[in-house]
Length: 228
Picture 1: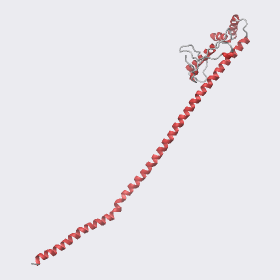
Picture 2: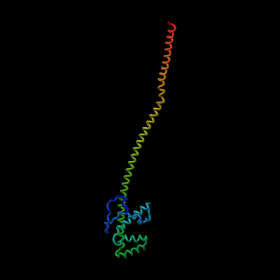
Picture 3: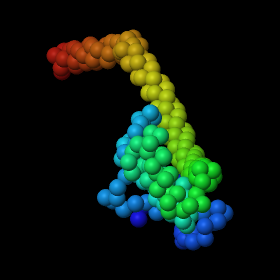
Picture 4: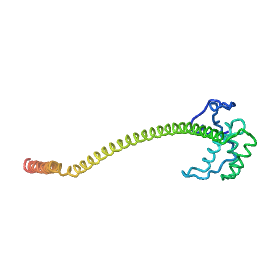
């Protein structure tokens, strides 16, 4: 049996069967009808609820009403009789009341109204309980959702900060590269005067050597020619 209450909270407590007819002891069972059980097709669905879900929950309420049916003929049997013909005119109610009175001569309209209030009160009671459990579940999910969103936002902020830091480093490196490229383009010009001076001295060194050797050779040759 599917448990509608379990849609909201986990219920580990065994269900208690209510056998006494006192109002204080009545409570809806949490069991859902098995698949294939007849469900009521709602006359209207103003909130555009999923039809399958709505029918399923209506079946739970009807099963709950059936479970707290008090002994004897009371409003519940009258309700079932009227619902079975799906007619709510004066003739239908008069006929149903005559049949009810034939089964219980002490039955009165006031008794039916009193019983109706009891069943309505139990539906309101269970509705409030399920609403509370459902809202608690929603609040829990909302808290988890916000926690995850905050965690992801913090991680995003950290990643963005890292990206900005890396971008800043990249810009600094690009600026440094551009400065060094500019410096590279001037290196030849900066070293040219010194290099030119040294090359001139090297050339002069070669020339000076040749001139000096030529002079020495000339004197050497003179000695060889003129001194015997």
